[in-house]
Image (cartoon, rainbow, N blue to C red; front, side, top):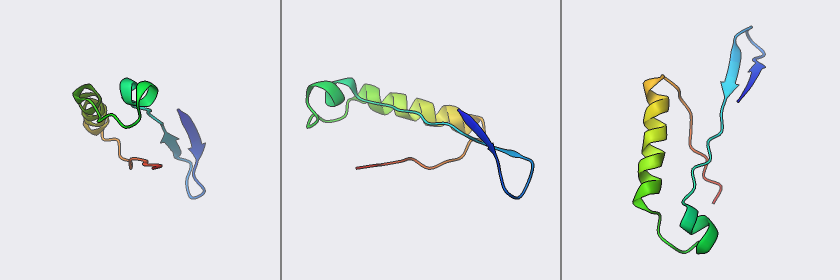
Length: 62
């Protein structure tokens, strides 16, 4: 996690990066469909951030 100061105030801007992967798809065969475990883990992570009033945008490099 990083913290930097914004140009307009003394309030820190925090950031976090979370890498959620589907092990079979990322190591065995990239053409495999995403598993239910991946979907559940992703939603659990998003719900944890939402319950703490965190906001952001998902990054989809593909």
